Each structure stands twice: as C-alpha cells, then as structure tokens.
Length: 256
Ligand code: 13P
Image (cartoon, rainbow, N blue to C red; front, side, top):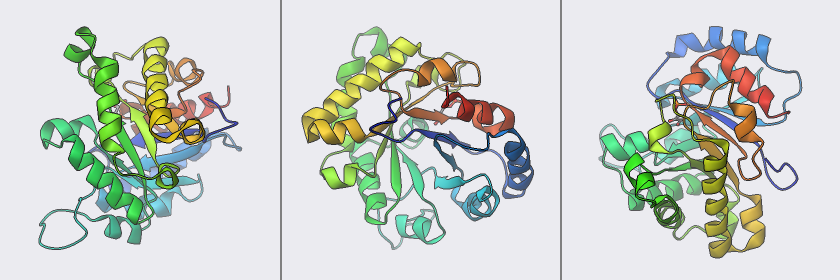
C-alpha cells in the first residue's frame, strides 16, 4: 500500500451467493467486528438485484455497493442485461468488469471489457477492471506479457482524467477459489508490472495514483502480508467476503 498517493480499497465479490434478506444480519455481524475508524474504502459487489438492499444495509458500516457486471449497451432490446445507467440510478458506486468467471463462462474478451469499463465511466461508476493469467500462461512464463496486453486493451481510449476513477484488480485465475494464494512476491511483481504499463500509457502521476488490488484466495491470515507490498493497494475478495468476521479482519489488516 502507498497511502500517500492512492486509496486503499477492500472490495468483496459475493458472486452468486447470499440473498437480499441476508444482508441485514451480515451487516450486524460486520459492524460488531469492524474497527471504529477505517483506513480504507469498503465495497461489496453483489448481484444487481441486491444492490438496493446493500445500500440500505451498508450505510452504518460505510460499505459502498457495487455490481458484478454491466452491459456494454446504453439501452434497448438486450433481454437480461443491466445497463450502467440502471446501476447508477439505484446507487451503485462500483462495478466489477472482466472477472475471469465472466471471461470463462460468458466468453467475454478484452474488447468487451474495455467497452463495459467505458460504459460505467460514462455514468460515474468506478470500474474494477480484472486481469489475470491462467496457470498455463504462468508456467509458460507469459504472465507479464499477457497481463500487459490485458491492461492495455482494457484501458484503450480511456483518458487520464477517467483513469482517476478506475481500479485495477490482479486476479491470477489459478488462485481464485482454489485456496492457492499467489505469494506476496508473485502478487507484488505483477501489480508493479501493471503500474509500469500504466506509467508508459499515461505518465508517472496517473500511474502513481491508480489503486491496484490483489484477488485470489485472500483471507484473514494472508491479507496483511499481501497488503504490505508497495504496489498492492487493497483486495478483491471472494469467499472470505461472505464471512463478516473474516472480511472485517482483512479490513483491519489495512491498518498494519
Ligand atoms: P476467492 O477469494 O474466493 O479466491 O475469489 C477471488 C475472486 O474471484 C474475487 O473476485
């Protein structure tokens, strides 16, 4: 973390878990565990239908609500899709784009991720842009090249002014939901490489100001070591964000 130049963000990705009615008891437990003064922004990204309940329930704990996906289209005949305008209208402040599960199960490519990030920025929502390599790519020593490509494609056509409202999340696919965390060194190496790409694209100042999160089996035990790395400015947490005590512990790790 580097608090001098950028925000620390702890974001949970609930994926397709929990229900709107489960948010109140979750928040009561979270409130009891969270420190009084928080040294990071806290976000919980839920299915779009649960966002209003998250906004109501998250107020006291100062938890912002986020979505997990958005349509690249503004409006129209796209049955089942949710637009950036609709997310903004119900109060979403953040939205994940390019999560590896969407890339894998819904065949989303880098151009689509780019279009979705732009759609969100248009409506004042902060995109949390996910990138990450597969195990095969890591074993072939292609990690940095592949991540560089993903970051460049995701940010194509996004201005330096808009970049100030973007978050990048590095999530190695092999570490998601597997219990296999990247070591702090592995995560730092890639997050630093992401900042270098951004520096080449936008210059030193914007690169210094962009928050880069790590995601992939981050938990109450390993969070402090990961967050101590200079280029890791927070976490995008799946499984552990569903457990209030564990999630609070990760928030607490930002104060260390
Ligand atoms: P886990 O923390 O469950 O590995 O999930 C990470 C993730 O995919 C967050 O977006």
